[in-house]
Image (cartoon, rainbow, N blue to C red; front, top):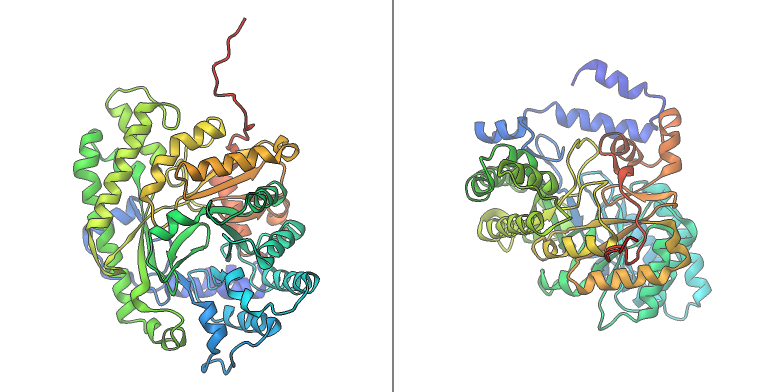
Length: 508
């Protein structure tokens, strides 16, 4: 850490005092020597084959934390000197306090709870208008005091007053934060509620729609939550670390697709597991993170934390491998490329589910289709189809749905939909419902004309990005969105009409 880098931060006119403080802390972390990794891991990191997601050279906090907020409201907190909540106002107040004590890689909580489940016991005799007024103030408070687009709320799958009110408020305010996921269960969720959810997407590109049944089957009876962008993790636990592999670079190291699948992928996966074990061991054994009050008061449990084994650049990896075998095929467009990608996902899943880790969820890491970061260049997030090459939405879903079974810790495709859908929201309803029926874990859509747009999974405002270079932003994640627009070309996503355009057209 140089004095010049410190001075550059404190003299930056576009950063708030709080943002400067956070950047200075990151500089301090980066000044430490890296954990004692072996030469092969170090080389893979230096070559960009593996990436530690900038969690710090010696991690002292878990990446993602999912406290049991319902338990907290029911018991209060000795550490925070808080009694249990007895009514709706007290519940909101207790949550507001605890959020400021829940850590994450961003310093801001990435999980605010399954809020309808958490708050419904405290509704009592409040009217619909009472609930609306209180929750609207709460929603505004979240955006203004915890300005980070990775902050995430879950609602659904049941139809209830909290769920409906949050949807109403989110569509009205159109805030970047918090991010929002609606849990969908065809046996529980009424169609008119799902229609309300898809109308919300037309208004503000939120919420995500999660396949509740598929997610729940991946975890035990203690539950799970969707956090940050779209990451699925155990409730009462979280992710101790997230590291990822650039499949494109592994493909470039491979002779052909057989060498990639049978030699190179296992080789670099082993190095990734070495990195996982080294990083999680420091967190669990030396940082004292798991002696904090969240653990001692039973809001999180050490054995419910899992490392996330992330991958990205599937599209480029498939393209690279097919070229090596002189095969002309395009990922997302035809069977040969798509089948190869499914084989890769299954191989990754087999590796992750069969490899023990020192600190994991039931002794294992969780496979994750990582959504990319703002510094990625010439690499498509996760297993998504490359920007500008996307087929129509129906064909897109058909091409990518077979991947979703493998990625327990989260997978998301962002469908870019033409503005005309606003005059026909029923089309989006059927697209979402069909994708979930086909095995999608998470349905996500950007509407082309909306100011709110998804980058990798988090939200930014186009209007804020346009002004960022001149005046900065109070939202911490705007800087990431600005970098992503420049480096990853997300605006090249093709906004498509939901139609029968995939049907062959007979030209006269």
